[in-house]
Every structure is written in structure tokens, then in C-alpha cells.
Amino acid sequence: MTVRQRVRIIAGKWRSRVLTFPSVDGLRPTGDRIRETLFNWLAPNIAGANCLDLFSGSGALCFEALSRGAGDCLALEKSPKALAALNENKTLFDAEELTLQRADTVAYLSNCPDKPFDIVFVDPPFDLNVLTEVCAMLEDNQWLRADSLIYCEFSARHNSFAPPPNWRIERSKAAGGVNYLLYSRI
Image 1: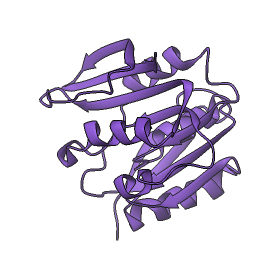
Image 2: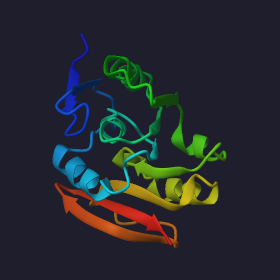
Image 3: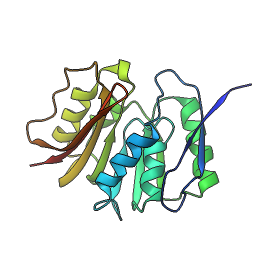
């Protein structure tokens, strides 16, 4: 029997509902306090936003965004087990505005999107060490609007992250060995 982990939605139309997901190597949901802070930062911009969740994992970020009024979200996930749980939660929540895609994020971002995104969540497994590469691909391959917001989360031990030069830090915090930052494009 597979042990299921749980994370709850903090606010919005699905407030207090629980997402379940399997244990998968590298899958580490964004904690409640960090998510609450992030979505307080995003509150003026979330309504109707077109979101992209690059390493969806538990789905905590994409479901929280949709719960709080995002217009739609494309969630990428490489793990078949995690993707199956995302599909179950999508059905359980009747989340028609969520599009799930099994994909390796780096390979997926090598293409250009049909349309750019308003808000992008970049929270890869810490041991992948792809944050700088993924953020450069977002910028280089037209995944972002002129006024996009980009959320990045990474281990406080990871000090080599270099965002694109035209990104400005809007907000930043650290908690429990995790750095989390919200960028805008300038």
C-alpha cells in the first residue's frame, strides 16, 4: 500500500480542502507559511491570471492559485505517480481550469508557448540544480509577458542561482532552510 501525503489549501474557494499525493523522490510541497506569504504577495495580481507551475509535484501551488481566483494554470510534472495524483485531485476538485502535462520541464521549455504566462512558479526539487537554466529558458523562449511575476524557491544552501539580468526582486524571504523570492521583469 502506498502511503499518501497531504497538504491543505489555505484560502479561496477550496479553502481547507486537502490534496493527497504519493511519496516521490524530490517532491517537497511548499509549506503552509511560505505559501500563505507568497499568495499574500500575489493577491493584487492573481485574479484571472494565466499561471504556469513548472514542477507541480503535490499541486500545492497550482491548486492554491486556482483556489484564489487564477483564470487557469498549466502544471508540468515528470513523475507518473505524482501526475496520477494530480489528475485524481483535479477530478476531486472539479478543477477544469487546470491543465496537466507530463513533461520534463527543461525539455518542455525549449519550445515557445502558444501564449506567455502572467505568473510562473519555479520550485524544482532542490537536488536538480536547474533553477538558473530554467529561468533563463523562461526569458529566452518567450514564456513570460512584459509584466510577468516569477516565483522562485530554492534551498538556502544553494547560493549559485543567477536570475536573468532583467528580473527585479519584488519580495524575498527565508524560512526553514528555504529561500523564496518573487521577481518581476523590468
